[in-house]
Amino acid sequence: MADMPPDDGARRDPPDAAALQRLLDREAIRDCIYRYCRGIDRADEAALRSSYWPDAWDNHGAYAGSVDGFVAMARQVWASQARNVHTVGNILITFRSDRLAEVESYFLALQRGPGADGVIRQVLLAGRYCDLFERRGDQWRVARRTVAYDWVDDQVPPDGTEAERFGPRQPIGCFHPDDPVYAIGAGLGA
Image 1 (tube, rainbow, N blue to C red):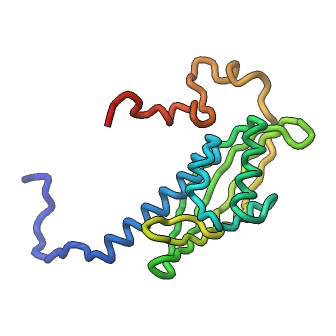
Image 2 (image 1 turned 45 degrees about the horizontal axis):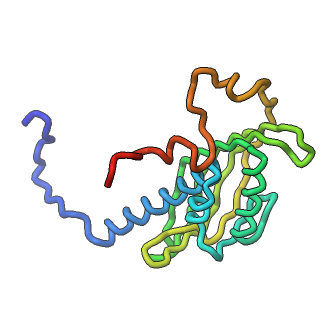
Image 3 (image 1 turned 180 degrees about the vertical axis):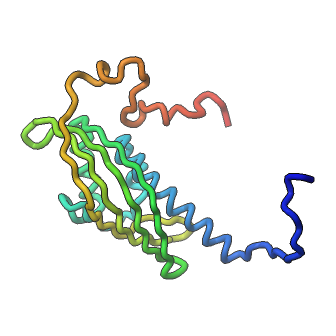
């Protein structure tokens, strides 16, 4: 077969159970980070909470304290109809034990919404989530987070409504449960 690499005669043993478990753990941690982004951007409190342990601590700069306090702050932002778009990359995971991992995730966040004075502001943020992840049972979640900010760019918010700006680019992303992501697979059955 032309598509097969030549056999060099080297024996290749299947990965052992510990190596496979590490891969599964890495994927679970990445999924948790992505779930955080969906939760914060789509105003999906269940997704946001599922990325933290209930007794987690979060330091976002403007807020430092329990995850319940962080979620309460997020609810206030969501109520203002602010828009957030978070992307993550460069996720570096260092396991300290079978149940603890230090995780650094680079992020970019575009945020637009009213400040305390009601004036609409827009900002591009870049930084890193410096997380201590803990596995409890078969789940990995954030136990402690510190956000390190590496870049901030205040921007001029665009004029016009979203409908005017987006034009035919529909649908426009929105909050849970109305965003199209929550309808994926609807009507397909089990």
